[in-house]
Length: 331
Image 1: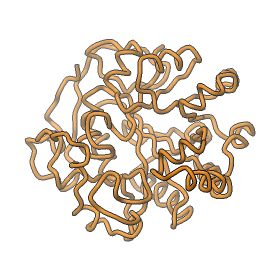
Image 2: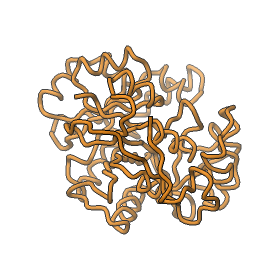
Image 3: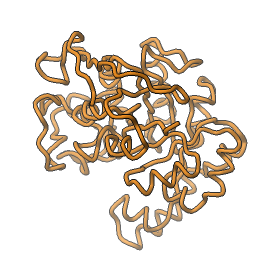
């Protein structure tokens, strides 16, 4: 069985991360699922964005949490990537997505799709972030026991163990993922774009902000484990142990054929990638088969993919606002 492939913030090697274009492309690429990060805006909307601060992926500045959704929508979310957004991937002013809008897009795919939602911490809203995500999913008709919301299978995840424990009060362990990374001064410096001295100070203080994740895993509290590639390379013994214990491994971010081979050799079941089309090919996905199948289910004959109209979508001629009767076969 080939690994399941999740598109990391959408097809983010091709188009700006977390944008409508990136998620439309991920579906067209045949990704089994997509991954997203959520923050709360100042007026309580669940906005898809990775960093706590604006600036890296938009022309805004300051915390995401300090802006209303209307203010965030006025920002430019695409120019930084330096690529042209095709007309079929949504208008420029429709690229910022909220979690409900992503759900609409996935439910219109016409096939089973996975959705991995990461809650970002530390958050100024604390566990209200998790409560807002859970409340939205419940209102939409999500069943925590099965993880199903129509054809979308939802799992929740976080690097912060307290957030994971909070989620486990409502969600079964099989749908909750404890994320794990190997943090060094270099990775802190590269990730936050700060110098060596600042990176050393921040690295030393991180253990007080985000407690270690491994105790949550070793205690058997979660069935899903999400190590980063650096962790996998550094601790293949632990990865093998988790696999032997029956955990489902969701490794990020897998973007090369060599990394795919490493993960497959270790028995990793789920790969998160910025390049879903390439990783599907390297993982041995049959050409022309729309995927999104549950783990362990053999692939069947090709079927169509339907991309539905998000609420308030303007133009039916664009992919981002296709009619539910418009069907495209993924190749």
